[in-house]
Length: 335
Image (cartoon, rainbow, N blue to C red; front, top):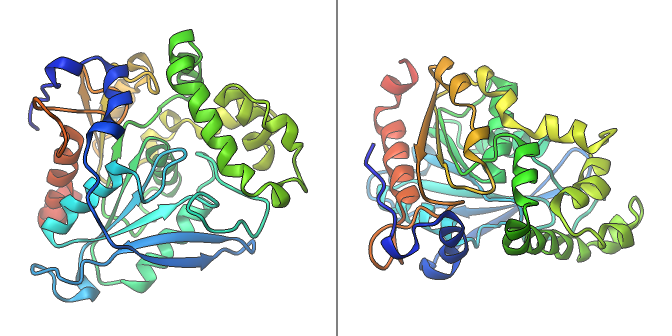
């Protein structure tokens, strides 16, 4: 693993977090969209990057495939997703982005969106992709809430998954600690309030459908993610209290059950996932889990170099890990 040296003029975690979406380039990619139906009558939008020009893997049936899970309000258009696909394209791999329900422009057909604890949609997507490409090596990478969802799925399924391995970036390990950190005045001002408004605008598009079950006026008054989760997310997924939801959503409790190789990258100055809440001791006890911690990097930041437009440290770790899994996978998976 290479040492991470943050960009000198923006080494502080909050600055890295704020600047990355504006500084990093946005590679131009063409997706093929697929809508899949769910057992409850809903639909999920998948964006495929087929990489049909792959020189290393011209046979589509055996082309290595990576499922990508964006963050809380993220979609296949996020710059960090585009960069991971760009890295994968160079290696000849196929990617598919799992857009959470209602986030990527598609209609909600049922009054249900998504949360970090409920893995039913993720399971449906994983089995759908595996059934389509049963002979293709298959792994996943999740960022922020996408990483939490992936960890929760892996903790529940153990070895009963078609995935060979997984990469996790900037996941929140303990939701109580993340919520508390994001409610500190400066963090609320810089991140929490903005993210809450993003969540509200993403569901306001589906107001007619959601009004059947929720007091949407109350939901729209939330000023923090915790208030939003209390009025909306925890209610939608049948939790008695928000604390019950936050216990269930915290991946730190599932880490010991993970049974496939997983690489997790976190920065110790990430206000979304405070350093003291990272389960270092639990990770040490599970030989399947590698925890990579940097002193700096913020939340999905990891900017490096004088003018960090192109590749971040996170992109490089992603590229090295997926290449190691697909090209030396049997050795890694049998360690």
